[in-house]
Image 1 (tube, protein in one colour):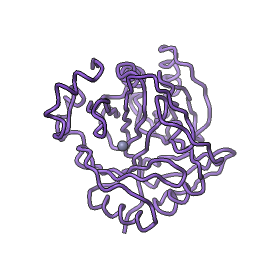
Image 2 (cartoon, rainbow, N blue to C red):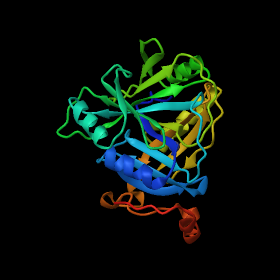
Image 3 (cartoon, protein in one colour):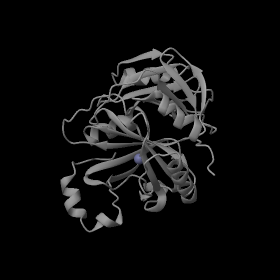
Length: 299
Ligand code: ZN
C-alpha cells in the first residue's frame, strides 16, 4: 500500500548560461543555491539546485544549464509554467522587484489567485502567486504549483487522481485545477486540450519529481505503479535522494524521489552550494570535469 503523494519534491529545467541562471534565481528571485554538481547521466553538464532560505522540501528548483544554443520547443510531454508561492500582501513588492530588474511581467489570475507571469533570462515560464499565508519577509515560500502540457490529458489526470491521490478541485476554461494532498496544497494546472509534442532544449522543463518519504516508500511506489502498468526505471541513487522515473501517458517525465538523505550529506548547512560536489563515481575525474565546465562564480 502507498500513501497519497503529498507534494512536489523538485522541478528540473534546461536553461542557458550557468552564471546568468544563478544571478537571476539568487539576485532577482532571492533563492539560495544549495548544491552545485553535475548531471549524473552526463557529467559534462552542471546540475544546480536552488531552494528557499530554509531549504525546505517542496521548494527545490534544479537546472541543467546547457552551454550551447539548442533552444527547446515548449509543448506536450513537458511541464509548462512553474509557479512559486509568495507571502500574502507581497505582490506589490514583487512587482517593484521585477521592475527594478527590468523584467516584463503581466498580472493574471492564472492559479485562481493574484499571479505575476514572466520569463527567466532563458525564456523559462515562471509565475509568482500570492499565497493565503503571510510572513515577516517577502521571500518565496516554495512552489505554488505548475502547469502540465500533456499529449493525453485524460491519461495524465487518471495517474494524478487515481494513483497519486490528488484531487480535481476546479474546472476552468482552459485548465483542470488539481491539488496534491499535503499541507502545501501544491496545485497542478492540467491544460485540457491535448498538446502537440514539444522538444527538450533551453527554455523547457525536463521533469517534475514528486515527494515520498523514505526508500521503503519509494519501493512501494515502484510496485504500485508497475501494477498499474507503467514502465519504470529501477531505483537510482541521486546521492541527495533516491529516485524512480516513468513517462506518463501524456508524455511527461514523472520522477518519484525520497526526502532522505537530503543536501547536507556532503556539505554542512552554512556551506551548501559553495563548491562543486561530485558523486563518488566521478571524483577520480574531477580535474577533467572541472576544466570542461564553464566558469561559474558564486557570490
Ligand atoms: Zn529530478
